[in-house]
Length: 294
Image (cartoon, rainbow, N blue to C red):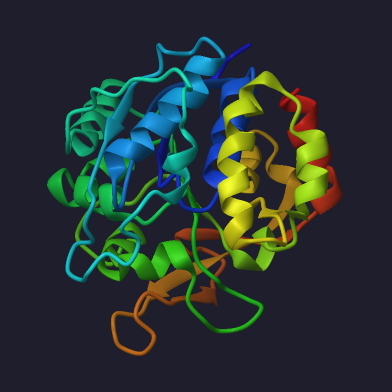
């Protein structure tokens, strides 16, 4: 079985869905997780959280590197990894050097040209700095998959996109860097249809890989009593089961003007450079997720 090489860039520790997505990638037998990089405020604590999930299932071999804590040109509005207070006694690495993520990403992608899916499920600072540092990198990917944006249902900003709008613009190609062979976005139009309440999550989160995630989730429920929206796990799952969603082709522009800074605007175009998820079979998604994570 040929495995998909996936490099995960994440702000694990804010919304719980990052941890839920990492659990999926660790359990997906078709996934070769070549590394994890963390981004936004307290990236070292975020790296510890990723390490705790990996080590709980004997995957201490997965490289983890802390990345950028600040946005490129504006103040970072996500300064803390709140769920890190639930790390407790979970076994994990704690010796992460600062600011190694971008170089690790560059080195890893250049070592495997045309083979790696870069999955970004947080603000795009690491990705944008990587593309600015080495403008050939996007073309060396197999594909770029993002949980980012809002495209169809109504206008407005999406958290990952607006936290570092200049990074978002670079990552969507509003610069001089090359373009990836495939550039796929999963926005709020589809991800907000994949929701599970806390009681159902507690009942179904029985897999060993989800043990530390359950602790992190209890911190999340204090802020979000409605439960978990599976934004990031949907993007991860569609790397392996793309037919869970339906798509449109077009071009995405990113606003860099207030009050719409970071908003993503989609224009349908048959030969456009961006693929955007338009619809989702939520029931099929949840069945697939728990068939894998068990």
